Length: 284
Image 1 (cartoon, rainbow, N blue to C red):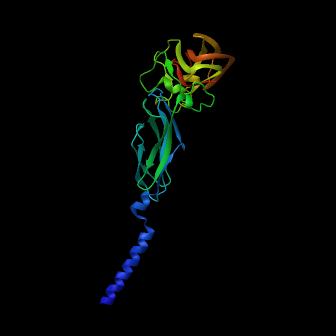
Image 2: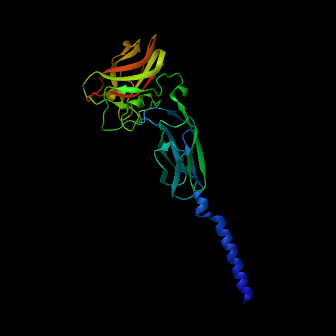
Image 3: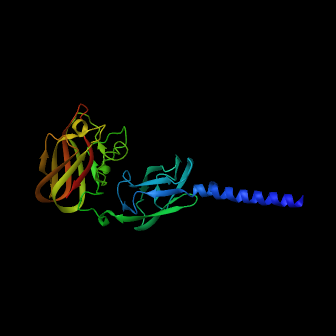
C-alpha cells in the first residue's frame, strides 16, 4: 500500500511539474507586457505657455498568449508633472495601446535631466526628460519654435491654444485637442497671430500649416488669404501675401529682414464657416 501511495505521489509530482512548464502562470504572463515610448528622450522647454506642455507618445504592448487586462504605471520626477498616472487597457495577443502623455514644467523647475518611468509588474522603461530654456532648444532653424504667441481671439468650444502654432507639430491630427488655433470671430476679418522671436533675427521665409485632414480638408476648412508681416524697428511691415490658397501648407519667401516678431494677418478662409484655423507657423 505504501509503495502504491509513493508511486501515485511521484506521478502527481511529475504531472504538476509538466503542467507548470507548459503554463507560465499569471506572473510570467504579466511579464510579457512591454512599456513603449515614441521617443528615446523628451526635451521639455522651460518658461513656455502652460497651455502647450511638452508631449510624448507612450504605449503598452502585449506579448502574452491570451487576451488580458494590463496596467502600466507612469511616474515622473518632481517637480515635473504628467497628465496621467497610469495606462490601462484590454490587450489581445500582439496588440499595443498608445496614448499621448503631456509633461508640464513649472516655472521654478531647474534645468537638467529628469526620469520618466513607465512600469509594468515586471518591466520598467526609463525615458530621460531634459529641461532646457527656449534659447537652448535645437530649433532646426525654425526661429518661431516655442516662442510666445499672441492671437486676436481664441475659440472656447474646444482646446485651440495659440501657443500650439509654435510647438513644432505640423500635423492636423490633434485638432480641437490642443494642436492648432481657431479664432473666435466667424466671418469677421482680419484675424491676427503674432510670434515673438526672442530678439532681432534675420528672417526670409515663413511657412504656414492650416487645418487639413481627410475629414476637414484645407480646400473647405483651411485659411485662403493672408498677409505675412515682420516687425522691423517696432513697425509691422507686410513682406509677403498669399491669396487663393487651398493646400494644407504654404511657404512665403521674401527679401531678408531683421525682425523681432512675425505675424499672420488672416483675411479669408475656405468654406461657409469662415474661421481662421492654423496648425503651425515657422519662421526661418
